[in-house]
Image (cartoon, rainbow, N blue to C red; front, side, top):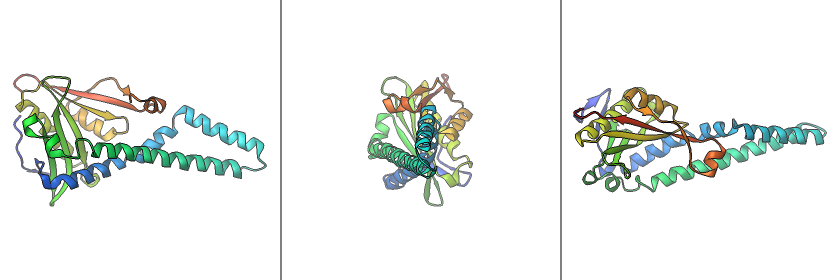
Length: 228
C-alpha cells in the first residue's frame, strides 16, 4: 500500500509545506463553522429543552392577555441560545487552532512518526489530513483534522486523504489507525465506513455540558494485517 503523490480527479495530494499553514487553518475554521447550525438544531431537539420552551410559552400564555408576549419571549430565548451555542462552538474551533494547528510543521514532524497532507486544486488547498502516533498505544496511528472544502466534496478527495494515512501507517509498521468523530459529522462517518473503519460504541463528551445535550463522540478503528 505505498502512497505516491500524484494527481487524481483534478486535485493533487502532497505533504504539508510551511507556506500552507494559513490556508490550512482557514480551511479548518470554515469547515468546522458549518456545524454551528446543526449543533443548535441538535440541542433544540433535546427533550428537556423542548419541555422548557413549551412550558415557558404555556405559562406566559396563561398569564398574558395575548400570545404576543409569549411569542416574543420564546423568540428571545431561541436567539439567545443560538448566540451562546455559536460562541461555544467558536471557542472550540479557536482551541483547535491553538493546539496542533498552531505549528503544524512541529506537531506533525516526520521525526516524530507523524505526517500532514494537503489536497491541492488549481493552486488552492481544498483538503487536509494529519496522522500522529497515539500517545497511549504503541503501533497505533491517529487520523486527525480530516477536512475537505465544501465545493470539492464528492470528488474523491476525502477517500484519497484517508488512503494516504492508511498507506503511511502500513509503511510505518503500525497495527491500527484510529480516529474520533462527533455526532454532527454524518458525511465523515460515511466516508470512514467506506474506507473500512469500524465504529465503537458512541460515548458522551466527557463534560457536564456534553452529557446535558447528549453530544456523543465515536471512535473508529482500522486494523492493519501484517504485510498490508
